[in-house]
Length: 406
Image 1 (tube, rainbow, N blue to C red):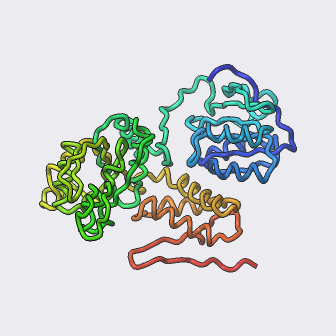
Image 2: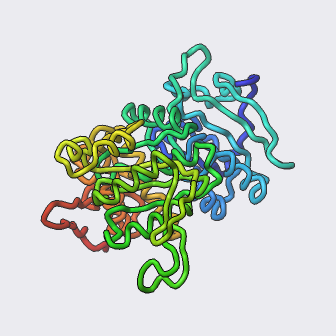
């Protein structure tokens, strides 16, 4: 932080907005404001913050640096154009200390570090770190683009991704269904020098075996009945960028041999053509099964397994990152509310406890579906309660219908 100053003077009748995916951080800011301005609105992400600013006159926006959907700097640029009278206070949610209630008194904000930056012609932009002078700040755990959660288990994933993203190394992303393997692959591409190039996704389990070769490698005119013109494949279409092979364990053995040759020589041969074409494509693969076991059983080529797993990244199941459950649940609620242009309901403490105690066999994807059902069952209410939560089981879905509102 650079320089110490005071928080801008807030009028008691002026509105405020707190935008953060962290309910704990929002509560800390509310506690710190202690009635200095009213009303105080809350948003869980950037999109919801923009919707709220359209509806309410907010004198100041307290903005978390780490938003689940928009980059904070991009959001500020939008606010500069659309809401030049709104002052922005950047909150550093990485801190392990809170602002005490007495810092809300006159001049008390000097206990925190701030610095000024311009916000258009009419506003002032400030930054605040929620850590008192002299207290050590913890190591920053910055989520990957498009990902949410600051648990220790996810912190290890973020670190590995950032280490390997700038390199051309082939990466195998392993993890159970619903843990976010494609999100990690997209983050690897976004953080790499290939970010401006294509990102091609191939679901190896979704393409029939008879079509897989032509889909991956392309085909020449006349290669088969109906091939009236030549066509490049998914690999060639990703030239200069990244190819993501999802569910790579489902590749037939014949295709595994051809994929291995491509990985070793960076050459492809279109179906029905004698020509070899050199391509520059980085390959990322994902599997929800143990490829090493498949290789030992002979259903997956061992040499291809070693080639794909040059740098493996294993994603934790949701039960291993329970500290992220409430934040993820609030994010899903916010996204659904924003899509419907509706106010976002909050999670009750009892609902949070139930969510954190659930086994989550379907991981993050199951949590998303549970919150979608909750957003429907809550109707026009402002709080998600335990009776709004229903979970999927092996024999179907159990849905609890709450009593009709009087």
